[in-house]
Image (cartoon, rainbow, N blue to C red; front, side):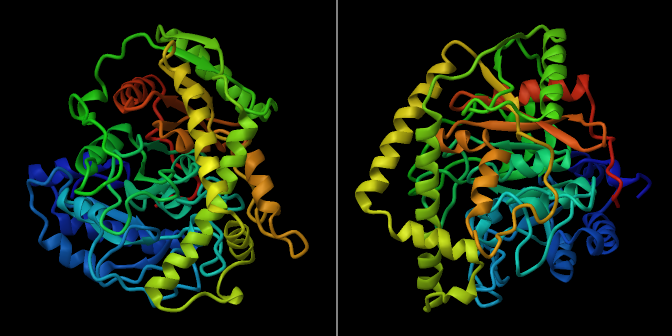
Amino acid sequence: MTEDVRMVDAVGMAQLVRRGDATPLELVTDAIARIERINPILNAVTRPLFDEARRAAAAVPRDAPLAGVPFLLKDLIAEQAGVPLTEGSDYLGNELVPERDSELVTRFRRAGLVVLGATSTPEFGILCTTEPRRFGACHNPWDIGRSTGGSSGGSAAAVASRMVAAAHANDGGGSIRIPASCCGLFGLKPTRGRISLAPVYGDVFTGLVTEHVVTVSVRDSAAILDAIAGAAPGDPFIIAPPERPYFAEVGGPCRPLRIGFSTRTPSGRQVHGDCVDAIRRTVELLEELDHEVEEAVPSFDAAAMGRAFALLWSAGVAWTLDHWGRRLGRNPREADVEPLTWELAARGRAVSAAEYLMAVEDLQSESRMIAAFFESRDLWLTPTLAEPPLRLGELTSPEDDVSAPVRRMGRFSPFTHLANLTGLPAMSVPLHWNSEGIPIGLHFMGAMGAEGTLFRLAGQLEQACPWVGRLPPVHA
């Protein structure tokens, strides 16, 4: 290879393979060397699969859309045949070994992506920081004393540091967009039903959870979504396919959009000054690009949405432990899981079926209010987070107040969960860094099925305010 592949995105790497300028094995060997150099600092990759990756690279079809591109899988939900899945928990340990790939992993491989290993996640993806007891803290490459966010923090750290150009992520309350913001990456949560969770799951937490990736470039996110989108037989949510490939949207003409923005949280709190500054600069940029921008927010009951989310999430944690108990053939003991997991599961088991369905009713009612906002506007802009990335340890449970991290998360990430509750698509775009050189993501949410609009705008913003060449202090 003649190019520095650190600065080549996934689409660019596949182009090298198709031109004959690189082989999949060369790309994989180079990525392995980067992981071996940088991972001891960041602790992002928890299970290397280097021998398997070398074998897979030798068999990659050269005509696959992302042939030979090195890739990492988050250690949550996505299952690989013969590879233990831990979900960041001592409870699963190395005991749960799937017999087949999930549909998503099959599609990743069919696209030509080569899996080099698994990335760290908080236990069962619960927290928006990646500091599981089992593997220890994952460090932010922009400041190793700060959190990567979560729950896709390992994937985000690996991509931001250029171990790989793209990595798997999933999102049940912001877990793609939060780490994308913390680590200076592009992260899009697709519309509910866009990506199948087959064969193990139909929906997770009543449709809160969806799959995708974190990437450096916008076009990588679009190309991978083209490769993995679409329903599988029996999926509970089916959404119409896009009019054209998402990859074609990136760099295409972006008509003037009507965009509402806010610097206050849904409960009315003012966000951190760095986030206000990021919104101000982004509004100026959007206006320069001829978009119509005004301060406006959807009309909905934020407290009701918060209560519904908390109830669904705690019930979901109880289900998670029961699900794995059934698959393992033994129920967890309190010592098997982290204190917060045990506490949330206990809360979830106290929820009645009627209370659960009432919460679903409430969130669906409020979702209609939010959806109405997009009848007169194309997008809603906020900071991705209400403050810069937290210091490691800020979301650790103290012995005398195990659930304290839940309240802290609500203040830190008051926006992202709304896209999960409504099923709407949303993205975090790395347009701003504060005076300390820490990334501050900007969050755009759109109407149902509006990924094309999001990709067109993201491509326009990427061209106007490039970020791909910006490297963190810790990089390969």
